[in-house]
Length: 112
Length: 112
Length: 112
Ligand SMILES: Nc1ncnc2c1ncn2[C@@H]1O[C@H](COP(=O)(O)OP(=O)(O)OP(=O)(O)O)[C@@H](O)[C@H]1O
Ligand SMILES: Nc1ncnc2c1ncn2[C@@H]1O[C@H](COP(=O)(O)OP(=O)(O)OP(=O)(O)O)[C@@H](O)[C@H]1O
Ligand SMILES: Nc1ncnc2c1ncn2[C@@H]1O[C@H](COP(=O)(O)OP(=O)(O)OP(=O)(O)O)[C@@H](O)[C@H]1O
Ligand SMILES: [Mg+2]
Ligand SMILES: [Mg+2]
Ligand SMILES: [Mg+2]
Image (spheres, rainbow over the protein chains, first blue to last red):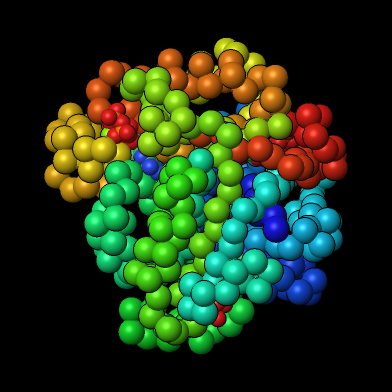
């Protein structure tokens, strides 16, 4: 199992979610973040204006996925979050040792 | 060492913390998140009312733990966060390569 | 590749960032968190006053780094976030399976 984390433009959240749902992702976690990449924020545009500070608002999207699904979900994330402009985001994956669905106690692939 | 992450109901934070402290957990990190699982939020209840949008508020609890403690801490998390209703949460673990206590520079199990 | 996570004092964010930039880190992600360590918050000081509740505000800093850079970046983080007082923070690393720069599709070390 993998935890897929994407740090992306807030305004892309809805289209990313639509893409993930169309693929069949059944759950995800969203939280607020900010950051910068190689342009250090200075040349990134947010809500139509150039952003004058260097921590640009982003959203973090996290998806627990089976190893089998991971490549497809990465493709969906990259496609739906890409604008071609600086600041589109980073996506990374880490191995998950165990996952549990609290209500049922199910573990592993059955938990997600 | 493991990083245990739990995405749970905000109203369960206090009882989860009490359970973890009773077990002997000495530190944890809390942050705000939102998300949805298999019901996509529509049928989840938050603060007594059905939640009308599909990103339901949750809290993220993170606990660094030794491998030895991890199963017990998972049991505490599952027991204290369970209501039996949809939306109780997800818990997962990942392997930690290194952990450091900043003030002392201690590493490994001594760091947590 | 590693994901380095640091939970540190909010007032140290600027000096930590300066240290990381001086070392050559080209990107990072920041988010809000709170928590407690072995003092359970009671004896920690935030903005000059003793903090009366036990979830003390912290910031989370995340840096994706190559395995080669990781030890140096840990040194920078520890040096720049240390005050010698309780509550300085925790830093940990996890292995990253894959990392992607969304705009270009680059993967691995080229992605960060
Ligand atoms: N090395 C890194 N470690 C952690 N987070 C990062 C890193 N680099 C970028 N990020 C996060 O990803 C967000 C988007 O980064 P960004 O897309 O600008 O990367 P980039 O490498 O500069 O690519 P581009 O040239 O397309 O802008 C940043 O705001 C930050 O939150
Ligand atoms: N696949 C997933 N990846 C990442 N986060 C998830 C995933 N599924 C659920 N979550 C997070 O966990 C929270 C709680 O999920 P939830 O308990 O509703 O899962 P579920 O599988 O639908 O179980 P239940 O049927 O008991 O509701 C969600 O709000 C979301 O933040
Ligand atoms: N075991 C843990 N798991 C997850 N997060 C932790 C853990 N311990 C501490 N933290 C996080 O790190 C922050 C800082 O912890 P802190 O520096 O007080 O650790 P400590 O072990 O008590 O060290 P010190 O004695 O120097 O205070 C906490 O507010 C919390 O967010
Ligand atoms: Mg950039
Ligand atoms: Mg659900
Ligand atoms: Mg402490």
